[in-house]
Length: 263
Image (cartoon, rainbow, N blue to C red; front, side, top):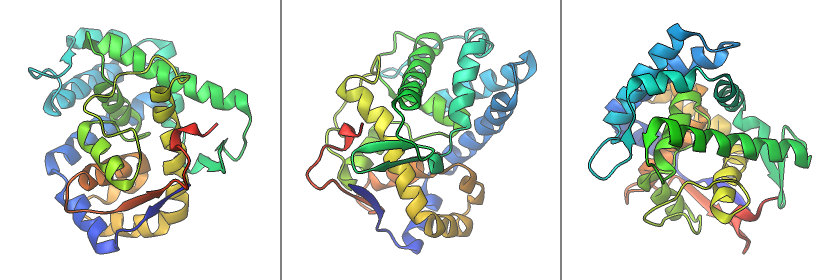
């Protein structure tokens, strides 16, 4: 089981540059505030006010609040949410988790090189808890994973968000069971959908470790060199672009196993 980089450097540069410039700008705006938020020992009102304002603005630019999309709560709800110390700790943990620390060996996930079940279970719980918490407190009656994952991506840069285009990109790469019309927010990591959310970062981590030199070279030659600091966002951008017919950047080989059965 391996995710391979099959696009050449020119294709990767072109994909990054063809990704909508407004989306690049929106990510940079929120990510800057997110870095400061994550770096704080406890969340302070000044940075939370900035983060809440920018996140709500960019989520709206990215489609939240539209007629068929998740509805956004008011800005004061965002502020009170990000002042919560437990949520701050969970998002900070994700923000400090490097994809280079995520890998797998056969069917066993490795967190910082270790297969210990307790840290892996804690990782799963933290990620799904953060997504469900954000879903409940930032959105009104949200049931899909898309905008909570976009929120985590914008704040922490941790992993791609499962919007329809990224899911199509994953499907085109060879990931089964991901390209459906809706992806409901899983309550925990025990079910199939929860496993898909929590296992994908380890597959991406292995890919990043193997192909980092080629990816970094292309990122530096693109119009968005700062994306080298956020490998999770690079996968988000490239998988989004792979969702169209014009780009084949990644190809996934499963060797007959279900990719989300990683332990």
